[in-house]
Amino acid sequence: MKSLSLLLCLAPAALAASCGGADTMIPKSDPARVVDAIKADEVHWNADWKSGDPDKVAAHFGPGAVVMAPGAPPMVGDAAIKGGVQQVMNDPTFSFTFASDKVDVASSGDLAASRGVYTETRSDPSTKAKVTTTGTFVTVYKPQADGVWRAVWDISTPGVPPPPAP
Image (tube, rainbow, N blue to C red):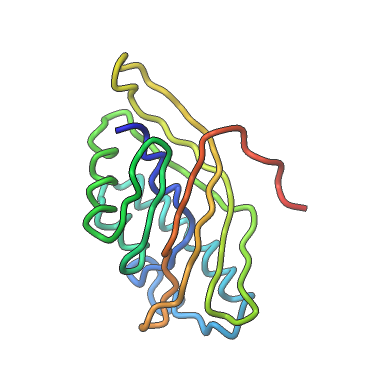
């Protein structure tokens, strides 16, 4: 499978309870705190990528989440996302980091979206050479029944990152 480009480029900060505890349960009526929590959770999500534990990475997604990565069919739901993460983590050269440069919260308080850049390193399946790809992502978040914001849609695309938001 081509780069799940990271799957999860996915971005940033879907706020999993296991990653941030009570601080991730942010009232949806406080957009500034939602933005801060999403940005802060990126630190946890990046650490989870580094840990090599697909369960930790997948915990950042809500039920029925969809991950769309270049060259791969959409991954829908927990099992598919965990499987995709496990597949890329099986590569000993694999690494993945990301950071959002913009997070917006809907005025209704029921959706948030982030965009940013990622870097993924993996082995090319045909040559076994180490390949590093950079690109961009958009991740959409929703607060879950427990009040935790988690990613529900995540899409990434390789290419030159855009300039930072003003």
